Image (cartoon, rainbow, N blue to C red; front, side, top):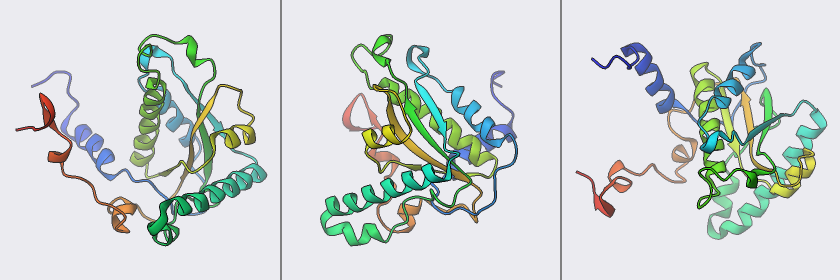
Length: 217
């Protein structure tokens, strides 16, 4: 018996949160319970980061006017994305891609400014700040799912425009608009899979041994 392992029920809960986490687009109008958002952000802030740089920053959008302007900008980018998709444009336009106006909370998540000062772990791979922030966001997502709260990661925006809307400093980089809130239900599978946009690849396609393309046993 591994003395460092959680008990069976706790292990099952971790794997269930991972398995049932969804990128949510449909929300109810119900608010979060007191303290929930703070717990989710604390879970994110407990995430690992290269060189302990903790590059993530969270902006809670409390202004209804600012939320509406962010939504309008995301919709502009949605139309541009459709144009870029060519033959799949009409199919794409049938998808619901965000819940900014209906969710309980909207957060803009960004990378801090002055990141070039952090070299530890980033000398050859400066993108590790984004990898670190992604780990924090996954923590947020799993904590929310464990408490029955949906999260949707919206990435259709122009970083410069979103930076201006949220008065972010030069050198910072917005990476996500998070929609957070109560849901009517959690999708039984990823929404894009249910909508037949794509399917999840089998593990054999992504797991190699010793060299790229050499299937693992």
